[in-house]
Image (cartoon, rainbow, N blue to C red; front, side, top):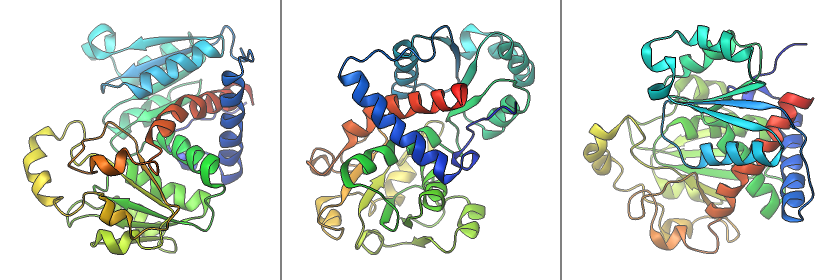
Length: 301
């Protein structure tokens, strides 16, 4: 049987993604009601972290525990990866010992190499190019609170980073319009913009991007590995903070999302992130449920 990986959202089709989100909501309800669901009993997940993490690590570890399985944390400092072992060799070895591999790394090429040489599913826990697990949680949050996102307008404000790239893929697969507002020089992947011209629009004015939007979202201005650029980015993104005034241009029932951690007073004001229209805490929780549904799909389908 062909191994299915989750390197980005495009590894699954629209029907499969909607199925996973629906299942995530079911698993969420089961957990809340104390219904046992050890569907991955005796299964193990290797987790490779080259980038620090809170939500990704805890959600995958807790998810495997709730499923009756186990997880193994690997970082460069306490594995042979830190001593120069080729990622291809690591993939070949881990594939013979675990049932799935999750990796959180800088270069997307590292993930691709891992998947190429792995005989078990490889999951993208984040790369500098994409963050698909977060998009599963984001879509679950919207579906649970506002129903189907098909045909709606979504606004991305800020850096055209891995999250923005993933929102472009989501626009294609979930059939919504995406308006991206970013300063010159901070655009998302041009190849993604070119491939999705029918539904993705790049503008420079955040207010224009937010008009008639049902979902407004952003991310930190300075991601991991970009710390030396922080002061320049603060200047470049001065007019790209999501404030109450900016949110007023969106639909009355628009929600605000942020993948966290957030820097209040930079990419988002404290008033917005702590407002009832902000669903960031539910969004963060949904990482757990969405990833459980993904693991079940990859290992049990």
